[in-house]
Image (cartoon, rainbow, N blue to C red; front, side, top):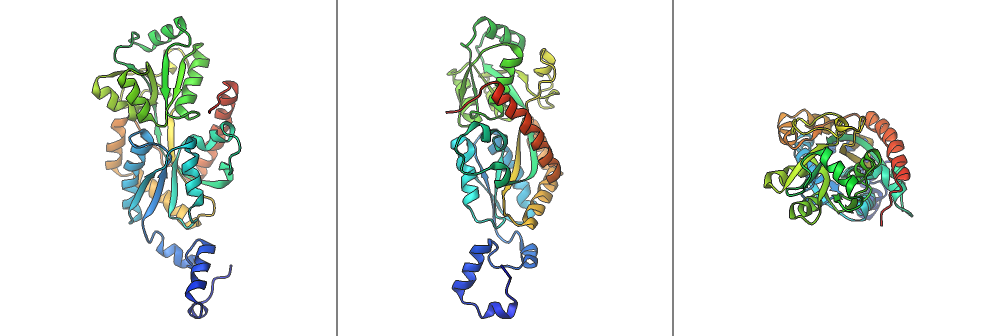
Amino acid sequence: MAVPSRHTSLSLSRRQLLGAGVASGLAGLAPGAFAQEWPARPVRMVVPFSAGGAADTSARAVGQRLSEALGQPLTIENRTGGNAVVAATAVLGAPRDGYTFIWDAANQITNPVLLKDLSFDYRTAFIPISMAVRAPQALVVRHDFPAKTFDEFIASAKARPGTISIGTPPSGAMGHLAVALLQQRAGIQLLHTPYRGGADAARDVMGGQIDAALITTSTARGTLASGKTRMLAVTSAARSQAYPDIPTIAERGLPGYDMDDWFGVFAPAGTPDVAIRRMQDAVAKAAQNPALAASVTPMGMVLVANSQAEFTQWLGTQRDLLQKLIKDANITIS
């Protein structure tokens, strides 16, 4: 749609101006004017996971610094349900005006093979902007679980196949996939229980409703502080700076095992390029803030803030790996 000149726009009615704004998603602004003004009001970041988990915690920590970098408030909105599809649908239904983004995770690349009859294609519906953080995961057990080490946990699982319960945030997410790969590589069978979010799984392992949980180190932190859980291993290729005494699963007999969770910023397709570029710049600037590193490092999170091209290329590689794992392990969700 041609943008009217200043003289012409003065002759348009209010209704015509509003209609033009809705149709373009830019409130009738010329590209140059939009570039100068964005962001001119608060920005919304939708988080598909429950409050208190790693996704929410990291979104709020990074979001505070993004707000500073953007010069506008950035609000976090938790929209759970549907294996993150509820949030994705809400974002896709919002105006494509550069003021709504999603803080998403592996479901961007796993949902297409886990869910039937999706009303959209993740690859074309969303634009990757930047992976903000990696979130190493940890195997934790209730405080009175007999196994004291990772090796003892595996031995116990082999002795009692299908009886040790383990919780993860939700079906098909990185925690679930990490459990599936652990079972494949270690030759064990666990009783998997999916939860809406990591905080929910953490609550039940602390309460003794489940034997173990595979959750991010940031979510596990509170359970350890309570004294109601013990951490046996982490899923990263290298030991966590926050938990240097905890071994990796790779070093305990499963070389190459590397199943970090991660969170990144995506925009709905059709979002103005200037908003995407400036958001990526804001993520990079936020990651350089020492205060952000000080807040996320103790939780075991690792700041990434890669470029849009790097993130897009990595997603392609991850897509191949995880979709194959889902098919090989016959992972389904109800």
